[in-house]
Length: 331
Image 1 (tube, rainbow, N blue to C red):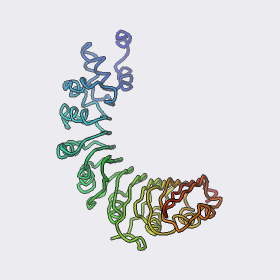
Image 2 (cartoon, one colour):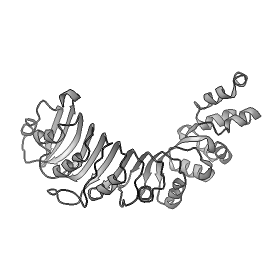
Image 3 (cartoon, one colour):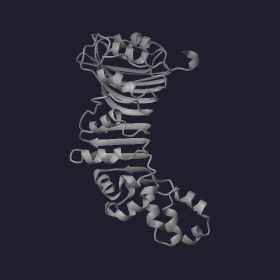
Image 4 (cartoon, one colour):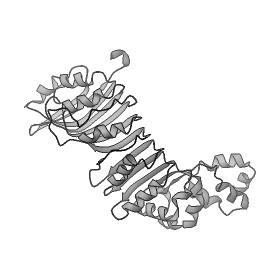
């Protein structure tokens, strides 16, 4: 097989190499001969690394990581051990081409400062996904308040053992277009002001204020680029949601779940008035207060505008799912 590869030109070989995972590429071709050594370290290569298929004992081979670092454009590390081993083996300054970083099952408690510092020294990053155990808010705050990653286009931050929120958001505008994060309702104007280029927003939105007043410390900016909204609410009211949708004139799809507060969410006519302009609406197991004692009382308000409507009632709460898909002609 090596002889077959040897007859190919450098350009073709490099195209083939980019289909390999970086770890397996180096393991297979490095140290075979001078030509392969030169090619697998060529900075024109765009390699991806995923640690899911790497044995733990291979994760400690420091020299291998440092050799491939300057060719890596995308890295996925699937657990905390892999993350720490990689960060100790590769200096941030060597990852000169890195555009995408995914860290899964990161345990942030003991290593918070060093991990945040490491990530903040990766200025070429365009996509960052962190699934963590522990408080990761400090990184989110740094991204939004200090704009530590100016080229970032996509940011996803999920904590498995606690709610993670943008606890402070006062800073320069970012270039983020896709965002998955948690936010308190009163902080939402600041968050949206700092992300004017947003196209996709997946947000857990929590409220601690009254249900019958318009939100906010300041008005919501108009989000002209936002087309897709996935919204998990907690104690958010019909009035709050009305304000939010008014700020998104070009929204094409809405996914809604969580727990609402106040009236109107158990009424299909009221929901239709709120969502009638949207091509796609998905309501999934939305918990809402209701005075109805019969499911039929609720379902009768959901006319032909709605599809796949289901509802249950438990202890004064309705659990509602429904779906809307309209063509533009039907709007």
